[in-house]
Image 1 (cartoon, rainbow, N blue to C red):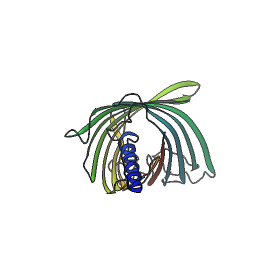
Image 2: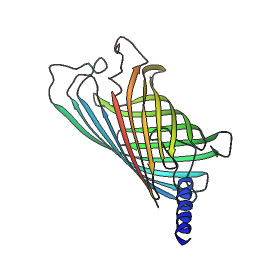
Image 3: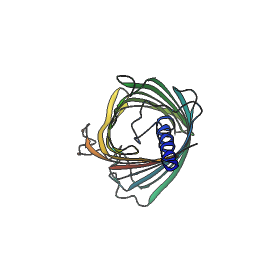
Image 4: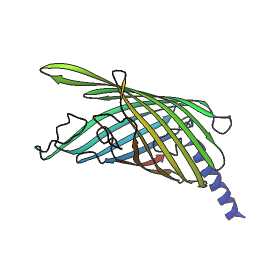
Length: 277
């Protein structure tokens, strides 16, 4: 009897963790869930991108501290590091390599981000879950503001999520001794589905439509999609996603190929490990 009682209490604790101490089961597509008041998550992100028209590898790393302010409002702060290595090239026509160039250019960029998420409705108790999301990122040479409308639904075995995303970016450059601003708008739609194989194991699919708009014209658009694996335990969770590019949605003279490998990469993989305390 004592053994069964211990198992019962342990199961309740696990269930409470799943409901109150974790707000995500996808790496890219956000859900409307928020951490309970006072709950905290520490998350480690690693995103590897590779494959352009020239040699290109990039590793993005992010350290996030997430805190539940109320049962419907959470905030977080990120420390971001971006490492990239690319073959020397003259990018005059959307990434077409200059064969007279040689060598590898390496760079490391740092930035900080602040994120806020407000839960409007619950994906289980209500017909559909919903939330509003805002993020500000500041780097030495650029500033980004991002907003999301989050919609989702959760049943005993299935999770559906849809994000409509808008991002406004202002970058700074110096040309002939004068500082210039470069403005860019990004519009994105993320769609995700996951089947829960067990209470703490899920296998799903994430789709991403990414568009880059410059001076009111769509310059780049591509579709991505790939599998997501989720696993959680009493005090941590792991999410892994592989997201290959499926097709180029904005074919033009500068980029007439089936994949857009001037603005985007051929494959993006992301590993997210989270700890609750």
